Image (cartoon, rainbow, N blue to C red; front, side, top):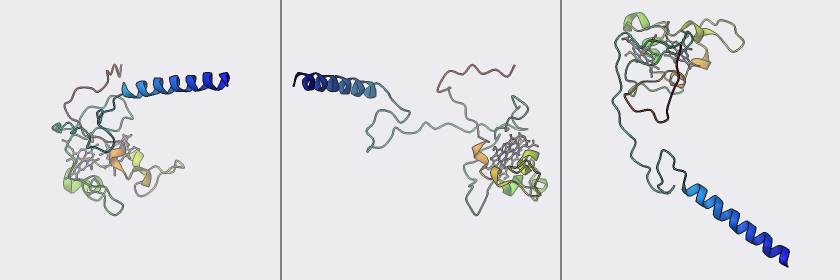
Length: 141
Ligand code: HEC
Ligand code: HEC
């Protein structure tokens, strides 16, 4: 009996500890309950950079120097390729998708873009002027 009481007290203490730990963690959506609306997302203006943004290292996917919210990528339609594909880039005066986009997963160069590169925003992102969410000491030097 004594053993059971000791074990139960230990369990209650452990539970109290984990509850207080959860209460002190706050995610980006704030401390609102899961079934209520999240905090309003911060709105920032997209930065447009004529001529593109300098890359920090050779194989970096260049960041997108224009707004992209109007261009959708779905199973049937890729809004980005309307300007960046082989067929369209000259007419649209846009840079053509990079050479690496034609390399398949086995390392062979394909005639058409590899499906691995279909979801452009997986690697290419627009930029906004905003404070860093966490301190960043990255340096390319
Ligand atoms: C209406 C045509 C158009 C569409 C649609 C478009 N872009 Fe662009 N994009 C451009 C042009 C033009 C530039 C060159 C801008 C400049 O250098 O000033 C560019 C530049 C870029 C660059 C920079 C390339 C480099 O070498 O610096 C990236 C990355 C890019 N776009 C990605 C995307 C993605 C991802 C999408 C879809 C979400 C997209 N673009 C949709 C016209 C377009
Ligand atoms: C898996 C990551 C990845 C995906 C997905 C991807 N890219 Fe890229 N992209 C890169 C990298 C890395 C580079 C730089 C190397 C190169 O030029 O191939 C690049 C380069 C580019 C460039 C610049 C090419 C140049 O010659 O300067 C453009 C434009 C571009 N990508 C557009 C797109 C578009 C449009 C899509 C979607 C159809 C896309 N990318 C999907 C990683 C990606």
